[in-house]
Figure 1 (cartoon, rainbow, N blue to C red):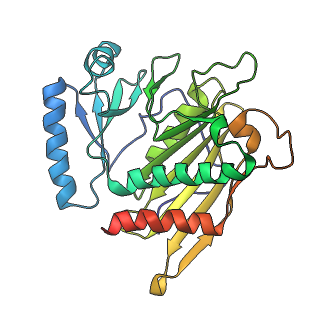
Figure 2: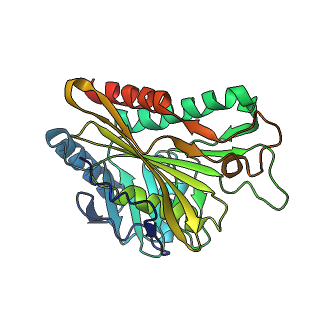
Length: 281
């Protein structure tokens, strides 16, 4: 069973969000792009030999100048990084995008828009992909998926999405907890909800969690577990997963067909099955 630490109400706070990431995510001091690429190549080989090796590497001693020069202004490196923690001088880089990781994000997006069809709102929601978002303290992040309604409330900017989705192939929730903390506390309350998807590396189990801001902390508000037991029997706990209409569209429903988005048993099983197909292939 995955190490979810999944009690509803668990909170996480603080300006730094990568500083608490430990094993299995390794750390290396940053010495330039050439050294970084060599390190990623080494970690990729380790990942192929050992399923417990993380798909992430944290580089230390990484300042704003290096971030702008080597990543933001470089097309070849633009998609290599995932998160930059300016106060801690840390940058999190992806070793290799795994198929289950990508499948989880893509399937979630497909099922989200499928749920919007009966409401007639498919064309009312922007999907912003992995576009970079930068916080006031200089920290930055690229999510797996992010969404923002086309029509925004007055005084609301388009700098931040309303909903973010982050996935991870892991046995530990620490990376996803740090993701939620960044989006909710770094966006000046503009991100309304974060959905995290943790896929077990060696356990056929997927944990979806929703996070929202409570005072100044990221608070876990839902935990849904989809697993595979004996004879490939699927089980669910904590379902359904609910995305509040107002959280996504930044307004209350205005007609009866506009309702909260509900990922019920069938939707959750469909998503999990397609992720496991990628994982087992």
